[in-house]
Length: 430
Image (cartoon, rainbow, N blue to C red; front, side, top):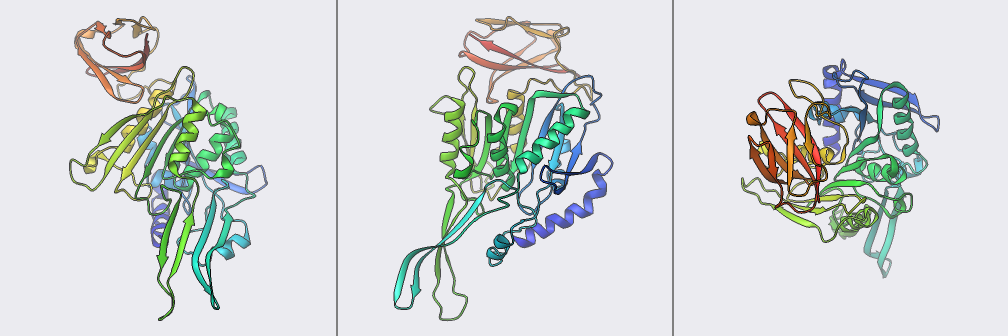
């Protein structure tokens, strides 16, 4: 694990010059007076005339904001969206007591730890103490960067952006990986009224977070049942071999937070999402070793949607890709989630046009049995209709008036594709 993060750091240094012209490094004081940094990417298509959203990217433990661009290439992934990308960096662990207590666990890099109320506990079992056997003993109970208010730091960054750019108040998304997922949950709980959606990869929550906000936010969560770092169940039992010959092995249990089922149930309840979820299986057709199951909790009325992707076989925060033959593609899935929960149109670049009321329209809205497409030559078009979860339910070619009588009531996306143009619209089937 330590070697892994050393490689990450080296890659970050080597590739810094690649994005230096496009991604700007900003330094500032946070609300507690600490020297901080974040990385900012403003797309070339931003000119100030249209409001843009904020896509806040939170790295994992031991990493930095630069890794979100260098490792994940998020500026390329998000190029079609009207979002300004922000990737802050966490501080090193500030508590010397925590540093001392974690010295025996080198797998945990303390050089970048979010102040997210993420706890770490370790219990040992059947410990010999003289002639006695202690059946259970809590050896460690720590909270990382407990006195660092990173939620206030992130809010300061966004408030600074609002003073410099044309920012849409309803289009803020948070994307967190590993410990960044924990930070995403914590920040969202404190600022749920300002956030359109949270995307978490391999992150989770701890009980200390849950009473700090409403949690009424659209959620897209990815987590593997075989995550070897942040256990899906919230804790993991293991046996550690003796350090000395003839010594006793040690039975331990590591606690990182809540069981993922509890996390999803919390957000479903707060968002008033529909139960039971719609389940979709993604089998391992190409024998890459990974499968996935999607749990979709549909929004009800003015509530929120919750989507949970449960992988099997994948490692910690492992991003699956169809380009490698995997059963799902994380980029496709979280792009679909963003499109379903943003009010922004596509970026106007490389021949892709945006939907405007003066050009292309789908009506009536709400609709009963038919929708009509106007403002474009439908004889040269392909029209796809999707559910808000991203599932295609209907396709039409060269039709101006489309029969939707077979669709269930609810919200839908319409994608209209011509040779050089693409338009996306929304409608509600009554």
